[in-house]
Length: 126
Image (cartoon, rainbow, N blue to C red):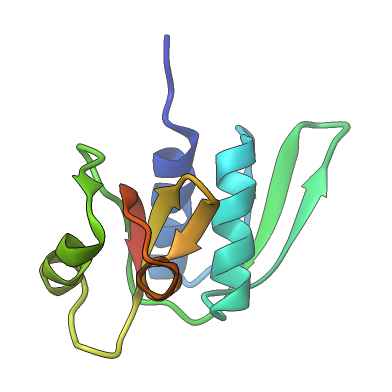
């Protein structure tokens, strides 16, 4: 049975935020999820995360975000189409981040436009 670890983690973080919890323990971990957490930490959506290799889990300390969701189906976008999906998923012009998986790795929508790469839409948070 295939599981979407990023979607499960985002749902767990969103539910914990609504329940006013500070820390979430995510039991299913993937490399894509770790990259998403790195970007969320850099954008101050989460405060920190700690990977436990022994239990194969990650402990996330929640930060400043209102909403975080994955984008399904994972649309393939060109550089010129990123603005359209930004308007679709984010609530305001300078608020939030869309994560895009490009040939150069996972990056934010601003980095993808700056480099001039399109890719597959993964998730968004604000």
